[in-house]
Image (cartoon, rainbow, N blue to C red; front, side, top):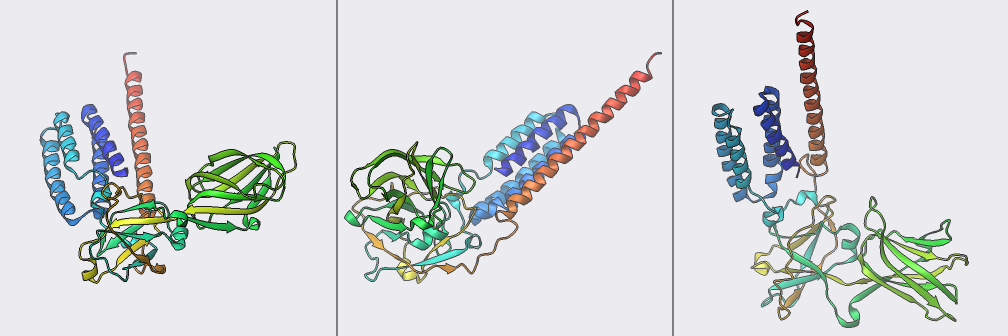
Length: 386
């Protein structure tokens, strides 16, 4: 996205420079063009395959030759130059990076190996593995990467029903919840969900035997995001029945707030808080000759700035396909983890700083030109016929 911003600024400044005959605008446009090229060929391109990098290098060389030719020979014909820039933009590789994503293990803090089943994987096209507690705790929604022999293996993250074995319950001690009562007599229980488990149901039990209350469940996916309503309903209990109230809502993995509206009554108190999750699995196409290669499947995660992968294999799987059940081994630190200047967040802040610095320089230069023109006009007016 930042590369496109730089290229847009370059195009606008070159148009102004040629039409207004302002040398400095053309120079600024060329500077932005150079910055866009540097960003593209020093950062963006290294996320792609070698063949794409070679093609992009050829395009860059040819494009620069054509642009320099038009710049020197046809400065007054900016439409032709604009056409060249447009053709160059179309010719450059485009689309989702994930389509040709080259895996960079240095961005991921943790890694797990997947163990093959004892019965082997012969005759099976797909594999699956259960998302365990370590993944919930250390992995986000976007940063799971399944890798074999340095290449990304597309996967689908989904639930799989197994009768009564499709749910996992985790009781959270009420003492670990953050409790408060606001000025409108609404009792608020906050489940911070530091392990980031994906919750789709709450089972709540209260100390009081008789009550009717309106209860709202709010979720907050991240620290800097607002609360959103997940479910609102009225709970009623008579003579201690029911023992538990069940509240279902769409799957969430962030902080949960239970808000109980008491109006003029005494606030009711929770006695048990149980978070219920569906068992989640990763489904993926088994790499060819996986067993013979001797190289394990690895699951990398723990990259804070990873983008959500766009691949999904659910449409290619058929119900009759046999699935091999692989087991995740214990979490290990990724020995290749090491962020460079060209990895987020350093690369993001570096280019932001350059971007704003260039904007300041352009504004200062434009002001200087404007001020000089005003002084010249004032001089001409004062030296006129008097």
